[in-house]
Length: 199
Image (cartoon, rainbow, N blue to C red; front, side, top):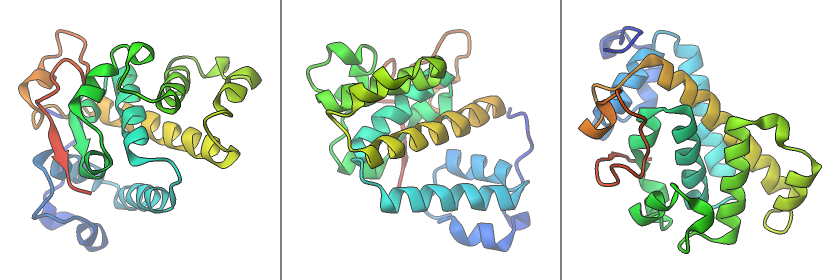
């Protein structure tokens, strides 16, 4: 059971309720949003940030999803690792690529650009103090200055929201492989047990 009570939908702020497509939302989305509905201004700010960031993004959706999943692994955010966004699948993300996240630098189905983003994401999630001029210079063959800023801001969002979701312990709506807290979870351990998010 999650650490914070889920607010019933009839008690959600009407402006928040208007943002959620209840018909197509997964039980995981409904539960997470129901918890965030306890602070509706923050929930709406979260939705607004992500919607604006995704609409104006320069980076491919597939690349961002790989980064999100890798950061989800470092956060041990089981909700994050179980989710697959439809827009990323539409952009070519496959479960074989997700499985390659176990050892991304050895993967032949990930591009050099994706590997560079994932190496950055690993440092961002585990040792951000190590991100120096040399690391940023290593991104430059693959990304423009504005794309590097975008990558960093998405990484910050994924890290922060993932740690928050992990702390809520919302696992009862997840596939069985992600509910077992006796072992470390990874998106590549159960590649076919996922929650589709239609975005």
